[in-house]
Length: 377
Image 1 (tube, one colour):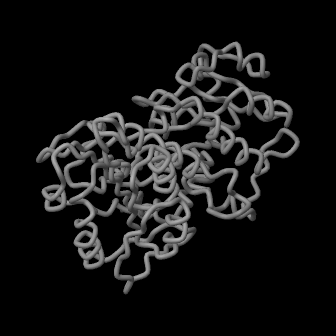
Image 2 (cartoon, one colour; image 1 turned 135 degrees about the horizontal axis):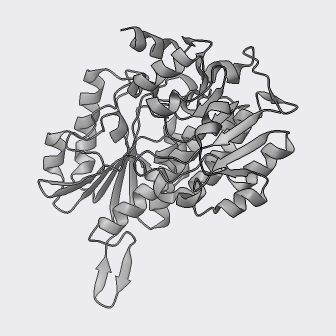
């Protein structure tokens, strides 16, 4: 029987865990031996005892587990030291952000580790249960509106009081992917007036179905990328987009930025000129900060005030809702692992589009072409 190991996450601010008692039970039922490092669930309010009751062995010294595990399930990219502990042929399942973590990728390559990167899971119908990018972006979109509402010095909903009427907050959301759509829904539930900008014309119907207004852009250039993602747009298009959106930013109380392009630097949607037209006291929440940010003045995990505008750029919002984030992420991991485990053993079929599409390293090679090019450069 193959052994699956769940280590405690050690990167700064990471409170999520890659398995829960729910998924441990399923792994054990599937014939896997499960080991969980002591304290792995603390950040998600899961005790060691709950893991043990689900059938996992709790290990205090994780060294042997790292070196003997057939499968290691993580949330954050392993450090080069952690990657170096994995045995040749082991399977690592984790978020990797490979273009930002080439040192870890090189170690995994040298060690002969098979790495399945959660962000590389194909966006297909069959792979929906494994789509961790979406499950975590959903949380980030929800939480982004809550932190903006908490920081804003105004009500979100329209209020009619004895002292008169208080108008609703105006929210502009940049990007209508998973995070953006959840941000729309959350802001609407709080009573705000919501406007949305997206480079994909197909997003209009989704935006309007949630009760928000779609900001029309000149569509001489298609923004549709593969798998439903937005593609990288020309600088001329982005300039025109900024000009149109600036009129809406001038009236905005809150701006939520969610625009990302897979494997690329985030597009700049709010430059200094745009910030200058925004009112003092307005809030910008930049969810694209890990890829450079959509706002020129964003600084990761800092509260910046620039020209009276408050700019928040949380780099890992999903971890601030670790309990539910771990629940859905662990289900994504379980679904992916069970795609290559048969009768309690690892049987990695690379003819399967999900396994092949998620593959980052295998048998001493970097198999993901864009990452391989970066490693060799």
